[in-house]
Image (cartoon, rainbow over all chains, first blue to last red):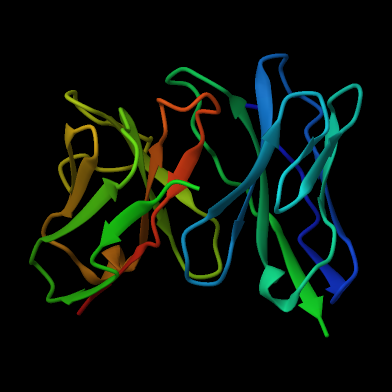
Length: 112
Length: 117
């Protein structure tokens, strides 16, 4: 699976949008972009995933560039409870090779 | 989202004993489950992939005789840490892939914190 690059940390003011970038320049055509987050001492929580079109759900929006080499996760109105480590992962959708391999992620600190 | 239940959430054991951790998918069937380990201030490290009814596939450097994995049904996988030692103390997290869902999403349990004295 392709590797991803994320900034190690970011701050965001409460109520503002949090924009978390991810680079995946070696992504293959059949690999999806997945976002998870891990709040301290808990298991990772699925947020969203996409292939090439922008995606939105109740938690966040995912913007993928046209060349698919990078993406941005957007939390539209960050709250203190969004403070967590956010992981961007690329993997194939199906098949035994579709393992989630975690990098170091981005630690997002939402401040009041 | 779907629920993955992991039990126990915390366990303290003496060195040399074995510890079993259970992982259940509560509202979906999971032909594939995964076990991760996480040390303090580090990211999750994949230990092994288990497929229902077959042997687990271990990642490089993970001792299969020490970390026994059983995936006997479509909703249950167990990880047994055999002859645990203090260096095995860690946060163990299981994950299950909703293979019946169109999105094929992988969901995670809340984790088990193992402390070996």
